[in-house]
Image (cartoon, rainbow, N blue to C red; front, side, top):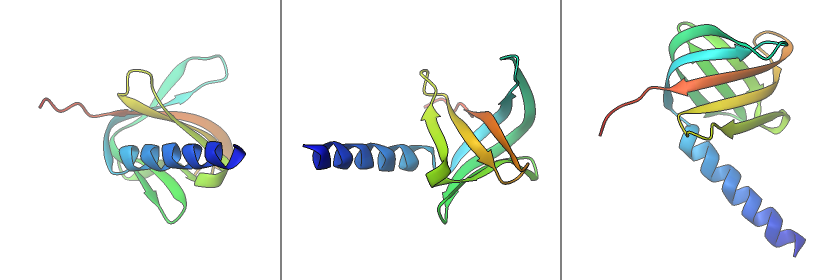
Length: 105
């Protein structure tokens, strides 16, 4: 039964990666130690490439980390992604949130 659970988790992770890859970001925030959020950039994208997740805002990386060492999740509203873990761009442990651009259909 354990292998079935692992298979379901692998499929869920793949589906999450497919959903967030190449999403346009309206703005990104960083979670501060006191629980507040600070805007760290506007207009960018989130990409998954070569085993890394890249959250770019403007001309800089707001977050860059290895997929196997970060925690990635969607906001309950599904209008953004949260990434927690070691950030290669800053060299620290960080928690960032990228809010997707909203396009009416």
